[in-house]
Length: 133
Image (cartoon, rainbow, N blue to C red):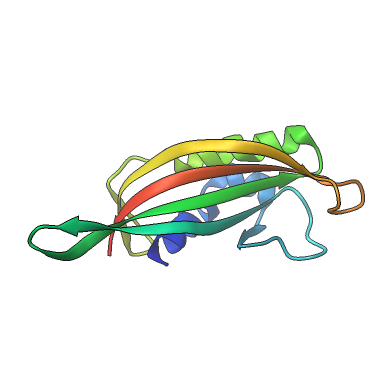
């Protein structure tokens, strides 16, 4: 859960990103009747980082950040802004979470033809975040 708190803090405090999406940064899904462009984020997996001296003191979280737009260009613009926001000077603390590393791990481009009036465009990006528990 800590990784998600850090991601929200990073995205919601990035002026260039919030100038485009405002406060439309939501966990798991975009609320019905939401305006676009918008962002959702979710935890995909959480893997402990084992230690020979005891229990894990840090975890690796795979987080997916989804950028949505009514045009392909707007979805790409938001995805580029998200990637810029996530390229951090680390280590650093975000919302009381000490983040050691944040690595971009790729993206997929999709369309959601049944969403909205004319469908929406969707870009899913994965990041691997190493943080202290």
